[in-house]
Image (cartoon, rainbow, N blue to C red):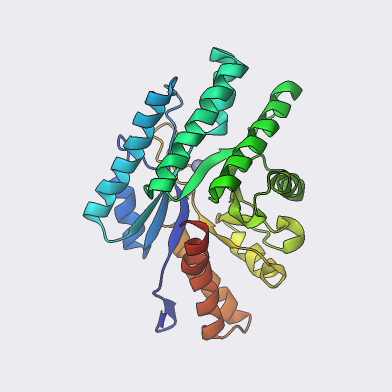
Length: 292
Ligand SMILES: [Zn+2]
């Protein structure tokens, strides 16, 4: 799917947030104009007013589904929804409603998201995981048993999860791999979001990765591509947050990096056919396996 040496096939952002009080549809316009063809719209918690009951979680999820509908009505891009309670919300609520209540609410919200997934309204559980910042030992242990519980539920439902975790390189992956095995969740169904660009097997341990494609990421991807043996893709984690403009990456970035990837692979001597296969895998074939 090249035209005059330029990729014109699928381009998927595997992790994007939107806020109807900020750019919302304007961000999608930018994404589509840059050549983007699909997004995973990931539920964005309102950290200034977190849900305190299951019915408030339902309202919050419904709002994300409604936004997806509005995008589909106005644009031709495909929109898949990822629903789940955020691990940072769980950690914040420990300090307001206590560990036990926060954990119970979190698990209820997980089960509710799984219901939406089983109805076909959403395709993946996320973002779930554990705090990405230092917490005391008690909270850390609780977050790991909670994550194990979540993985067991995902395994039972045979759905994938997008993981928000700390950035401790390979150690993070090997930890998560152990948890997956303990939960009987196939490793490939655990997708590390905001993943580093190293996609080699010795780094990812068979987990899937959605790489945060910032500056320099394509060089690392190209460097480790031949040693990769699992599913990977690209994301911006665009936050659409008025308080943090420009965080994390802008809506045009995945298209830009896709073209950069194909250019660098051509320079490395890959054939157009091989590049076509790689890009189709990351933006279409593998997502079809992970998000359905
Ligand atoms: Zn996110």
